[in-house]
Amino acid sequence: MSKTTIQNTNHTFGKRPHYELKELQTWSENTLIEYIIFTMQRKGITEFSTTLFPGYFGCRYDRPEGWHLLFWPFLGGYRHTYEWTRVFLKDGELLFELEERISKYKYDLFEDTFLENIFPSPVGRTVGERYCPTIITHYDADEFFDMLPHLPIKDIQSKLWTKQRYLADVASSLELCNPQREAADEARRPKMTLEQAKVLINAPHFKIKPNWMSEIKDECFGPKKTKFSLRLLWIFLISFVVSIPVGVFLHNNQYQVEPQFGFSWLMATLIFFGMWFGISLLIDLFEHHSRVYIKR
Image (cartoon, rainbow, N blue to C red; front, side, top):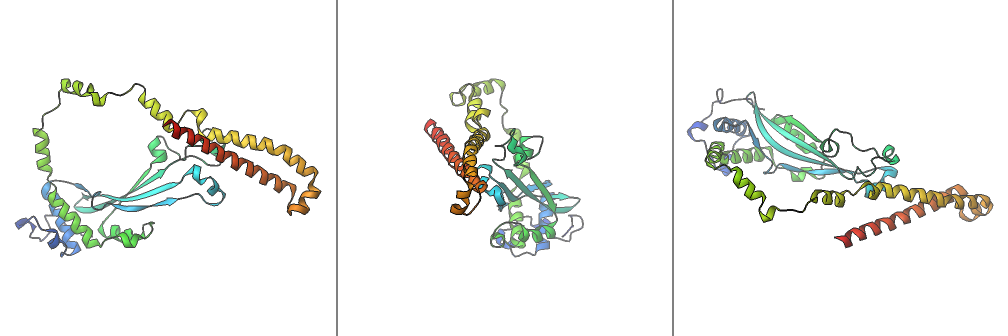
C-alpha cells in the first residue's frame, strides 16, 4: 500500500491534473493510488463515495437449517449485502471501506409468544439495530483487493474487476467531483422562507388523510390479535386438543396399529397431529391472504 502524500511524492500531476480514463487504465496501481491521494488533497476532500461505480458486490442468504427449515416460509432468513461505500484519507494513507448490511426480515413474527424461546428475535436497542445491523470494516489497498475474492458471495470471482481497473475508475470519477462549485451553487441558491414552506405544506399534492400512518401500520403489521404468531398458537392448541382423543383411541387399539402401519401408536398420533396442523395452517394462510388481496 502506498502511503505517499503530496509533499513526499515525486509526481508530475501538478503540471496536468486531468487525464482521460483510457490513459488512467494504462498506469500502474501505485501511480493510481498516488494520483487519487493527490486529487483528493488538491480538491480539499477527505472522503469520496464509491457506491455508484460499482460499489455493490453482491449478497448471500442465511436460511434455517434442520427442522427449522419447516418454518422457513414464515421465519424468513438473513440477507448479507456487501458494498464498497467510500475511499478516504487518514494520516496521508488511502483507506477503503467495506459495508456489510444484514437484513433480518420476518424474524419479529413470534415476539411476545412462547415460540420466542424456539425462534429468538434479534437483539438490539432500536429497530435498526435489531433487523438492519451494519458492519463497517476499513482496509488499505492491498488488504482490500486481496479480501474481495474471498467474500462469501456466489460466483464472486466472475463479478470482480482487476485492482487496476477499480483504481482507474475511482481516479476518473474524482476528476469530475468539484466540491468548491457545489458549495458556491449552494450559497447562491435562495433560501426557502417560512411563508413559502407554509404554502408548500398546504399544496394539494401534500394533503393526506388523517391517521394515514395508523392505516399503513395496520396494513403492514396489523394489531396483535391478527398477528400470525397468535393465529399459529391457536392452530397449535386446536390441533393438540383434537389429537388427544385420537391418541387415546390408537393407544387402546395399539395391537391393531403396529401390525398394520409398522410403527407405534405414538408415532401415528404425531403423524395425525402434523397433518391436522399443516392442513389447518395452509387453510388459514390461504384465507388470510385472500382477504387481504380482496381488500386491496
